Length: 139
Image 1 (spheres, rainbow, N blue to C red):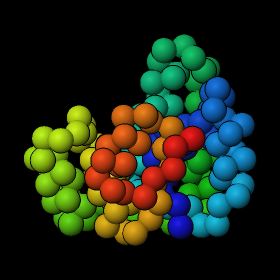
Image 2: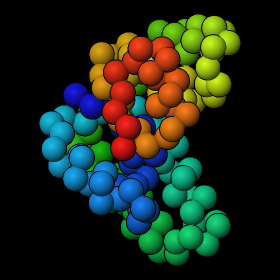
Image 3: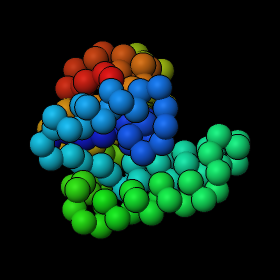
């Protein structure tokens, strides 16, 4: 199973330079996993695109409705952020060996603790995953 970082979801649902590559990649995957964290970050990213004028409000609503429908029909396995994920993220941040931000550390911890490959288009997240020996695929 592949755990999707928010950067991948945004490129799948919103027009971005990596959209075609992400769509092809996801079409080759079996089961896909996201977390409650990914879901909230995705909504925030779409809202930011609307506020910044990158997409119209009606498009933002359509994107969020499509994502919600996909999530409700079980396209994604939803992973709840657990105490073990928080502790693992905290431990990695306290190593002082990577420039991990809080939410990126949580994504890494979720993927690692659940034995999932992390798919991301975020270069710093990819580099941190590699340094921490987390199974990662960069788009």
